Length: 369
Image (cartoon, rainbow, N blue to C red; front, side):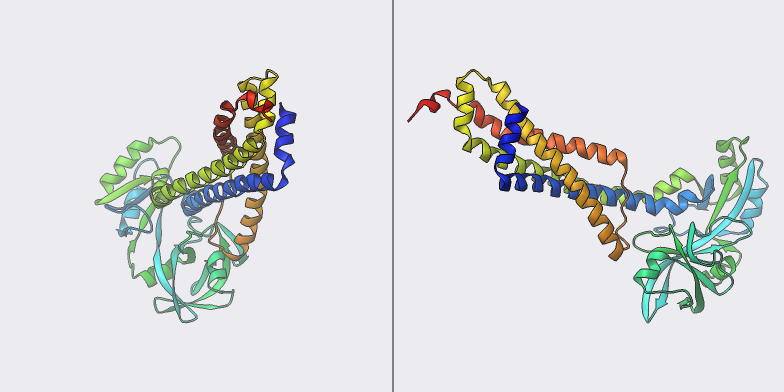
């Protein structure tokens, strides 16, 4: 049966190319969309996830770094340090702000970094200095490429001039990127004398985390305490709540396109070979065996299309990524697996279109003149 299926499929090269090409472009669309979703979601939370903090303490009503504002007195830092079970407590000062690049207003999320604390700096420095000094700034690679900023350039922020001394990676939030200055410079441009945005708390391994969390809430009045997992979720939920539904609809469209193209091409082939199927029926081949032939044709087209779509997705991802830094994708083996299963399912669903035609073929038609 497989031999007959392959013969039917490869006999008409143009139809095979159309069928396989349709699946390939459907798979390409699905892989790229899923990769973009994973890339956006993981990159937006990459920096926060990497910070070694068990708890984030912010002003009550704040939820994340981007869509809400948190202001806390730095005096609360010493209060938190005295809580039993607290191993380390540092301040986190940072927020989104406008900078001037060659006469244009651009946005960046400036973080004040204190090297003595060792927490809150760039995740990875690709070029230049690892730590900024007063009057210096480290910018993200995507920011530098998009805004044509180089090491040695001057970056005006809030009336202060900063020299670009480093290019970092891992701080791309898609819509804007992280930049890093000294903690003193951050407090100056944000006008946060004796104030900070968040407190980052590490708890000793022997301590009861829930008890420590409750004690922090009592100690820091008007505060909100988040676990690291909760804070990462808050900062990435814009992707899952707004981007995911769009991805889901587009994936369904790609799925429908693949089903339609495979179904129509194999249906056309079935019509053209009605007499051959009639002969097979006349010599005793059952409908179930004929259905198997059609399903095998569809599956072969689906598998070949999946492989081709995978190759195209890898090529486009590399090509587009060079010219559009915001094109952030991340691929997982799990995603490749379920997309392969979806391609096979897509092919089997498409096989139902010509199967109905086979069921109505009358073997007596073979003997007509």
